[in-house]
Length: 297
Image 1: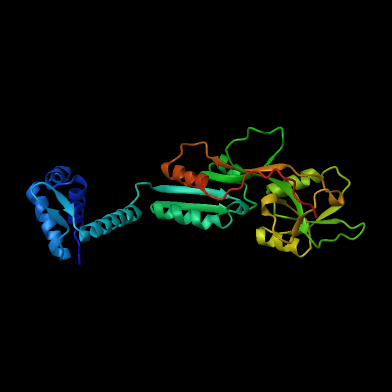
Image 2: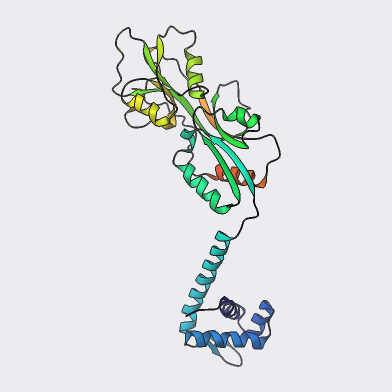
């Protein structure tokens, strides 16, 4: 059976309007044209779909079932049209973010945007050592998610707050430091806000420490911590089973609160950049700032 969508529209219009005359006006057709379409549809289906009298028009039992299918078919056709219709949005979007923010959501975000706007070219940079804020200011990125330290005296930084968290010192639950030993630390390469806030917090304190491990990948840092090789500064939301907070131990100072912010370039935002930013803002699953005190090791 190969049903003409025009016949389905005519059938739905007749049932919603309650008659051929009103349906004809709705579809800008003549009454005879509507009657002809309904006859064609019934011939195609092989069953009567309407009871017709001089005063009323009602659906048959088959007509009631067919109406549900007709509505579903037209809705599915409209969804297909929306999905594959060529988008007028064109251009490019240059986006940067730390991988600890995007996580597994990044592929979903990129897929969703690419399907909705196939004519837009994406240029995405992800990494902890990415100086996204400077790149936005230098017009090298159109927008970026940046991780910022949040001292009490700095409340009015630019951008839109996406998530609030805090920095903590993290180590394997089995981590042990030999008496009198230098504290081994694991860092991402500079520039990295985790690295910067940790070193700034340690400056001027009588803590003997050294860089024992450097990696540009989040998995590398986690491996160094999980094996007990080093301690590292993480955001509280990035703690995993087997990793404990060691704030206050080994002479380690407290670390500041933190925010993930969405920054926009200073220039005029193209429609493509606006739509990508909207998807980032609508991204589900973001966690609010955790006010409870992290459990220490």
